[in-house]
Length: 294
Ligand code: SAH
Image (tube, rainbow, N blue to C red; front, side, top):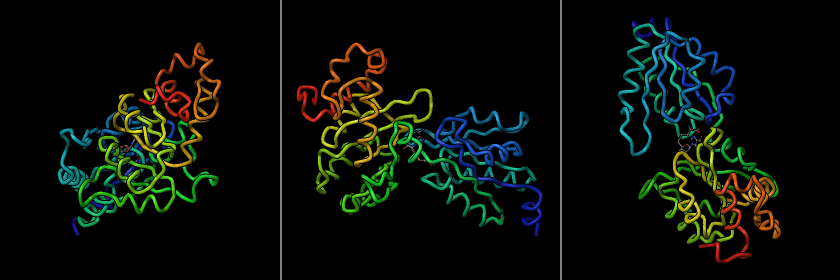
């Protein structure tokens, strides 16, 4: 009874803040955020989105990024319950979409179990936003019949069945895969995926500090590590990544798999401005310059 009353007095939202760029947040998300008394924020959320929160809202940072100290999931749920039961509206802000690798499902279950309704507001997930940010359409019909969103985080029994995924021939979009990239690419090669398969890694997509690397599967893990890319990043594996290669060759004015004359554009300012793209575009050229491959 008491629970039902609290639920009626206040509201709880699970809100997707999108991949980073504040303008990629939905109107619905900004409107809900503007009503909240309390906002619990994950560390993948761009703090700039808090401009949509009330000036007097209580903001709690409860990041839980892999490898860093973070607020345990149970404590996050406990805090949300405490505020809702005290009659406060609670917005739980998560990066991307709350239901795509965001533990939003677990939080919804816990709140429901406590008798509290929660409204879910979608966000643009990094798995489509990051590829799009460098021109990759994840389901381009010339390249794939579909896309698989998969976590690269698991090892041992949590390991995805990479061989089964290779057999689907679909675009693979890997979240949380950076730390195990070597193992993952090794598993894909072992399962028979071609070493020539185009790959991309996009770090901090849609934010000013966005960077990316492109290479064929055979050299991809090395290329990413040489480029010094880290989390958060999305990895795209499949023919669709070749569309980023082509675009890069145009934008950076360097040779990719596309244009053997690109090397002559070495003085192009765009290339100098983005050495990462330049070196990776060279690395992807089909053995046009084998010395660059290592
Ligand atoms: N719910 C989130 C995903 C959370 S899992 C979403 O829908 O996007 C965390 C992983 O998301 C990171 O390890 C990374 O793989 C990816 N990620 C989130 N934001 C990102 C960004 N701006 N750029 C690249 N990858 C991102």
